[in-house]
Length: 263
Image (cartoon, rainbow, N blue to C red; front, top):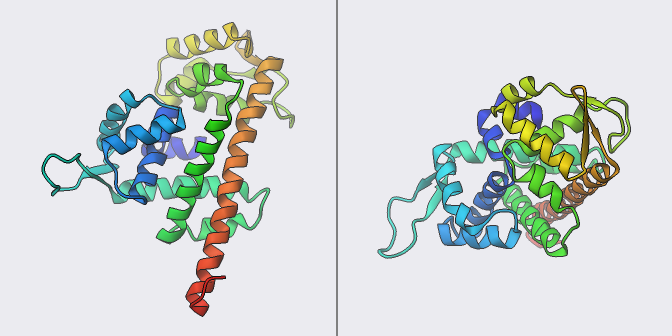
């Protein structure tokens, strides 16, 4: 994910924080389930619990800035504007989802078949629906890691910084247990944020007792390790469940295409 975001500013844009990432998933979901409108985006984002309804309008504007959506030219009077995803969005988001699915193939090799079929709109639509439902179910279950959302997920580039720390941790232990060298200036350039922004993020993480800072290195506390384990495990469970259900749907559709009957 980090490397793809480095290579593609559009992907980097939608991974910057939880709100933008949710907006991208919601855009795809609303597109395959009746149309993208501001009221529907507010409703879905509220259900997911990762971005306020008031921010939905700003995120819609941001998606337009990235040229990910465009207004449908004609609509009935006094009705909300309906937006259509652009080819740029569909190509970018499909590439992002393919990376997600390929990552799950380390655990479930059959996921490679889903990754290879994502250019088929039916597979793309199925995966988006199952991912959205998976995150809705996960949100409804609740959690005890509010600090993760406050410190990392909702802050600009916070999740990317966390991912860099985990990926660059020495050794093979997970969650990371040792000191992780971290150059603030280098990360600021990479993620297009200011050095004071990163320092404030780290100070908040220290106050939340998630990390310790020592001579340019970051060490996760026991609470920080628990946070990482919960975050990554929860995401992987959602991804694996969505991929498995999509694999089932794709297999059923192949049977229909071949035999003319549902499996």
